[in-house]
Image (cartoon, rainbow, N blue to C red; front, side, top):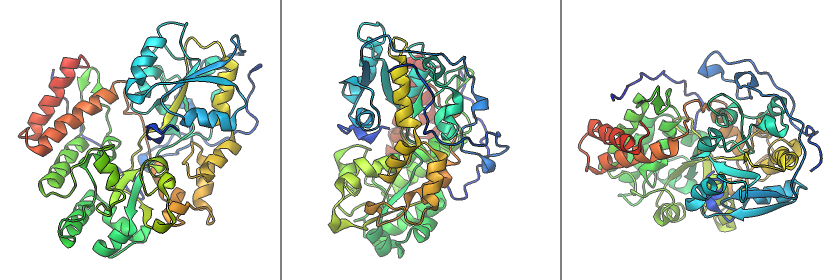
Length: 461
């Protein structure tokens, strides 16, 4: 089988940037429409990427008859891999539930096992962006219409989060309370010392394009005598390329390597060969530690990365480092992570599961409260208002308003390229790319061939 090369459309990048969900942090009655959902919004389909309307255009999805549902069991059983989602249910919903958590690396295997039989299957479970599509596209999950939720209730959600939540028939099967547009968190002291600027609008010029980013990385290395690097590892930037493809990995059964991914090969090779990163891997101890030891200028990511995962953020906030980090736009828009709620096909608590989904992802007052805590929530109206609110700020970002930085990126995100095997495919791509960066694979063509061969051996193509 031959690899197709699809010519990518040129994307407009004005004001652009780019869950794991809290990084594995050990974070009833008849159904009726929630009374505190966001207001209806225009659903006209955009004519171009520059005019993309982020609000849910539910006309592009297939709506099934909305069922009237009730509970037939005793209590909702929820499956997850950390405490974040159940914590939200406890805080924002009155629905009682039992919880079973499984360590993230074993979570999918556990889900596959219990979903095969109604005896242990959950009523409701959550998946992150890496593999949610796998379950959306299976018979193991119910359409939200089947548990009594109508598409009219989704009018203020970011459209990309619903694109992600559909099966192959464009039926919506899951809901997310987050939207996860990425920006660049940067160490203000380091940008001031080595780039001469520290305010977000000024720092943005060094991330205005990938050429500007590469120039800045060279400047930082030279000015610091190699003691400071722009980013910790090459994989910090790869989602910015992944999310700007115009084609998914698999089209009509064939592998597609979008030209933008070849650009990633080129930039990654330059970063490696010029020693412009610390060559860490995301989630390694070294990668995390570099966020707090003044050796690394920037981390690309969404709000949850700072809120929960890195030492400069909310969970590691220390008054002594107040103002040390800021947020600016990235060279390309991207998203990272997010968590989707899905009802299993064995659900016998449909009314309560629908209520949980409404309470966590659709009730405006609850989303407002999450946003006030630093979450970028899945409500265009709320986040647009936050971006315009001169009083809204996050303490660990030196009092900066992150919504005003991230809003433009959120408005451009498109999930139409995501497929159900993407987690595996992405892993194989990064393995081949890293081998090329490190020199164990001699050329881009050889790396692409190795990538294709791996997918063939896995039976994906």
